[in-house]
Image 1 (cartoon, rainbow, N blue to C red):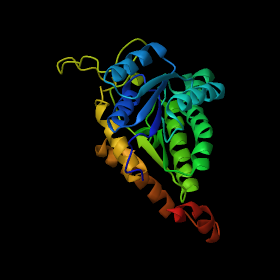
Image 2: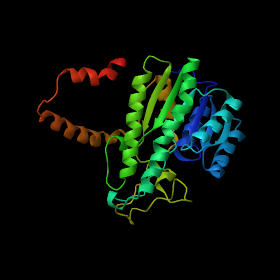
Image 3: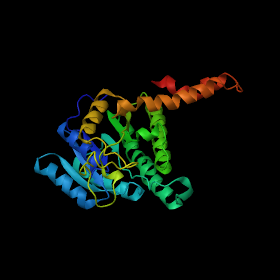
Image 4: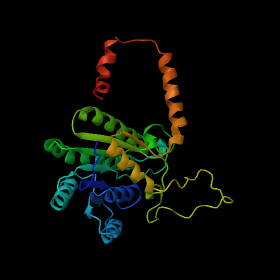
Length: 285
């Protein structure tokens, strides 16, 4: 837990808009020094300048999360300005082309994994060794999705990537138990961000009047502003799972209900010792 966040150095990826910008705002309000990182330099400068004009300790850093070399340069920049990173928010991500698997290109699959999964791994690889070496309280927040807990058709590459981020985060939590480095995984539902919009459009588009429904269209989603505060609270309290839509519990229950039924009807094939071996991580917290 990190009760006192004052003067902590935070790096937020995908900070030029949406959830990333909300995270930056909330950590700045909590008294942190925040490096806003993004590959979209124009949007990043606009967002960061707003914080700078408010006399908040914000700095813009260009970062391509899929590039290890870009991470090295960004880390050098942040540490020269603000000092070592205490809190890493691996938030950068892209959406799906919304194609069924039969029409999905290998290029689209690789692009989603390069940013949504490899970007998270690159961030952890770049920052975690220093956190452990310093031995002071630190925290890593990885942005997964509610679609890391159940699937929906037409966005298979996105769902698979978010399942990967969730599993990565759960493993990291187990491995870091007993160290001063905490881990959280953010699992937002539908949020009004650019991830679901065509290039060039901004979040929070004008709502569609009820008299003009668009069947199958993506709902607008909630405003991202409250999510940053939820993450700050989770970091302070050392909470692992961060959800934004408790009403989705029924969908998660439906998936685990089917899994439970399948397990209950399966014949035992392996020795009981398997449970102790595979469940070692749960004993760490």
